[in-house]
Image (cartoon, rainbow, N blue to C red):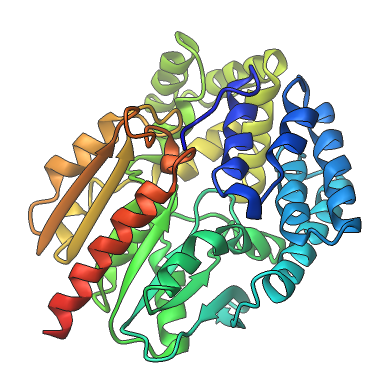
Length: 381
């Protein structure tokens, strides 16, 4: 399995591959390609995915419907009433799929946090050999990761999959995306009475996992799947040069008016940039591009790497179009005090070059599983 070029628009193509990477359980490949290979606009994208979602739902192919609705929802702006409707259809079909297609055994939990609640799923195999906490990234929700993390359940790990501020149901409750993710992580550990665990962070969750492990020593091992150590760098990386450098320069010198004008001009010329900024403002609860970047500037591991004293696994793809590759090398060279540090850069030759190894995600799952197996064997001994 490898990353495929199906749609000429890179962002669309990556999202298509996110579904294809799970195989027949998540989608009908021929059906997907037939509907979305030629779409060029956000409107066409959403219509095409909703078309196959409705068809799949009618045919009781609930996993297909869930992932198709997820894709239909992905590029809808937060101010579109349709977004919430499609989200609910997506979630509804995921749980139908969990119950009827996989017969999963799970527990839904709502962890009290800042007067609201964090949505969690707990998978508890009999005779579990250890607990693994899992979180997603930038604007994810946990249901879409169940197929990935259930691989860990098969290895006899108790899995606690949870949404933090800015993700899934949390954003609907007004819990905005925040750099101090360890607060949510600690609340989850408190709720379940967990005294020792490993943690896996997916996508931007790579930052969340390392941030959490720095401040909560109940987490004794952490996986950045993949690395992310500087949020401002990541989200300004979406702009082409010389706009990118101009925005970073304006932010550095606090030129709020100049930065906002630059970004807003770019948004008028690029629907992808417009969507990215619109979604960013939504999940962070900010009002202007400058405030948005200011919020993301706190998502930086530079000040906490010296606190990483546990077992750490860093993963990256050599052609990741979201996370600049220098972040992998920067983290690798700045973690001095870890009990152990394992680093893995996946290549195109092995099919793991994309963000979170989309196209051949099983490479990463196998790497993480093997690493966790070694860690828990060492712990038990």
